[in-house]
Length: 434
Image 1 (cartoon, rainbow, N blue to C red):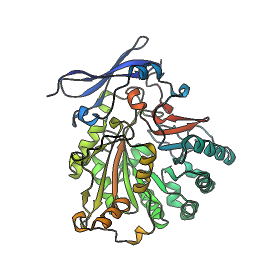
Image 2: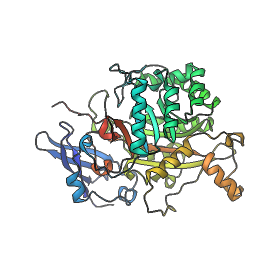
Image 3: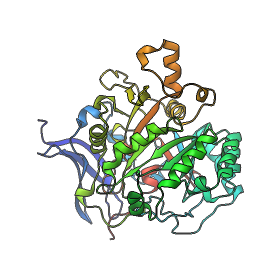
Image 4: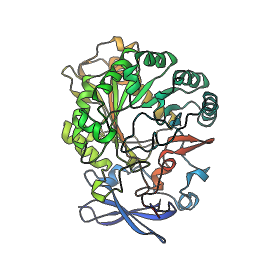
């Protein structure tokens, strides 16, 4: 049994006023890691950040705590910060605030106001992003970006401007209804569709998204498959609604491989629009998701690896090949992973794109592969690059659990008014009215 008490000191923000405050990560007698902090104006706060299903200190062993200089220099308000130490892997560009859904949980408050920037404005934004980030993975987001008729033209412009990979974050409704629109996106150079995918039946979608969407998701994937666009399923996991759907989502992904290239889980985060204040018991932590993933699928737990680009407490990832019986064959192994150096954002985006996008030449090969020990080395390497299913997750932060140590390692940035902002700080909102 690990010792209880303070295991890490960091900085956070008050969930009421968002001012920077000191914070501590504390292990309780039950083994849960909680973040404790106090604001002089608004009192004390305590929220679980790790439930003890995996060894937290082992998981974050490569992460250095904030230095005294970093603690002092980071204001907690990234809109005023020019010293963020981490480079950029992916840039999010909001191309509209409009949306054809009103989801219960939405970090961007999609559809609450009407905003559709001009094509010329967005082209200028893309040019600025390339100047700031080089050749990023660019994600068009919103709102719902497919509400723009000129989205294919934006994809084409971004490719010519120097963005290495283009991704669209979408609910898939228009992509299900208009095959010609999907074709135009593919012809423009779209690499990846980041598809909202919360479950395998309409009960989940009615609760989270307000309408039946199962058939639309299936049709959107089929249309993307037809035109060679890689699909990443993106489930938002909310306790009491769909945490028991994790295994079935993965089984659906396997059945639709290689149209579906990856699954990227997101435990619910209380940013933007959400239905009321989160209770402590509603918190669904990254290690809890890992536990449920292992339990529902039988995946060996040591196949789950922490991020080496962003902070380890933010993410896990795992890579699998699929055998002749459509079973997952693990490729990654945490026990044998002895790499200690951090991965650069540039290397990370190349790695992500290789696993999330489609490759026309390799799509001509056999879909179901034999076990890796039946292959020669060159075949194994080729399949590793193009014929694998990726399972990953990102645990975003909100005002209750924001950790500036984690924020300082963030490579997922949102473009706003000429700057690149860490995702969690850009969408941070008070959890309690002052």
